[in-house]
Image (cartoon, rainbow over all chains, first blue to last red; front, side, top):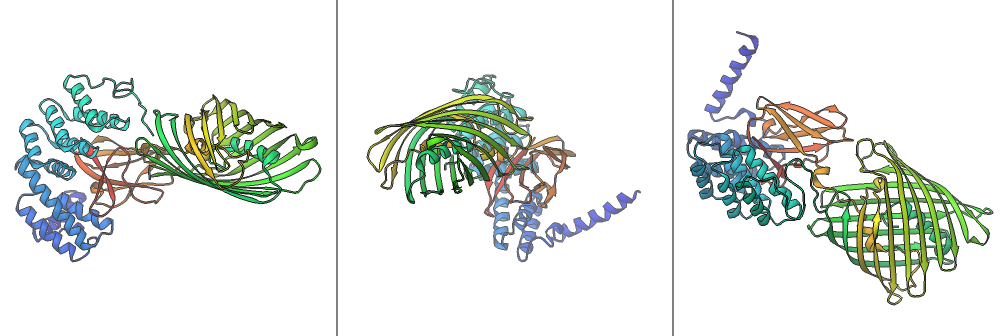
Length: 217
Length: 383
């Protein structure tokens, strides 16, 4: 057994013991009391309930890194836990941590649990992480939530992750060039569905990916 | 003076020397409002609204000026600018006089990008008989934003005046780090009882910008403007043309057409007052991507490379969920490239970045999310 393995095994055992005892070691020394005790309680409950704890730990560490007060850290972790619960309800018990995190992010951006459930249904057996993230990005770019959900669902049966990322990039470019979010989405969804997403943007005369395009100041 | 550039400063200096240095001290305030259509180099055409207050003080030897402006483009983005300038003319010594000057300016675009410059200079003037013609040689230097090394501008100019007409010709060499260029400008001003006309033509026949870091290119340009006094307090202005980039003062080149109204404190319009509604458009509309360079992610999960392309930085750090929210420094692997290898699983991540120990902010290319903690993070999708 190598020295490395000799070192890792005790460390893992210590960490597992700490988690089993409701003590996340990464919070020690960084998250102030009483937030640390409360966050540890949330982590224990989440672990028991089958929720991923890593995103919750990250959120607590984020608050600590930004010097947030204890109550704010606990509130942020609690809110994320609730979003993860909603996302799991929509995506199902088998959803990965990455999918649940993306779903939670989409919920925060304005998507609904019902729309996530529809995404799960349409993309049965396919990964949801990027699709949910693109849904959130479109809403954040100014596309109405219902419209963004509809667009992502329209692509859901055939698009892979790269298609979604290209679609998102093109919509964001059109918006940056001055198109309204809804108009940009409509143009790009038509192009994507027809397989011609490299079509010129309205009024630009320039084509899709790979061609640098100008925008308004 | 307005934050437009040294070549305008030269022209203004000539007008000041020839006509505007008054016999008594006087102060003037003014307020300009106007509308423009402008196309900055690298951008699409946009309309803009300009609001520009200004104040100036002139005495026989000293001239001081301050200008603020707020420009709003149709995207809703705005440029806020402020500048101040002063010029002191030393006592006469035969046909030769020395002028010392200084200027400073700062601008902010879209509430995020900012740029500033501080410059000082000296000119040696020579006057012909009757002060109807003359010339000067001058040098200007200082600091220009984040640029390493001081900018240097060397100018030779000559001017002549005939009643209502003034003519100016100048040649300027500029060094800014590895960027160098040369400008030739000819300008005229005609001042009538009910109209003031200004026009200029210029050329940048030679420009060297090794890696397009300042977008300086050889170019021809020209502008024309007209001001019509409505009464002693108010004047209408119309202007248009094209002007080149001025990297020393962080001004992009642009073509424009503008119309405006300027209200001033009671005094007859001096011939040296520029058309502010055109001049104040020359702020640098920095795209977000240029100020916050995109965070690139390549590689597989076990070894993702985070990359930032940026010049003139001393350090780049990232902090996010994949670092347990602890800062990690990127290594400079090329003069304009910073990288670090990290284990980052596929998924949606939260990340922030900072340059040179400054404030943490969302990297370019990420979705901004306002957090419960009162700050913004970037949402990064790693497929």
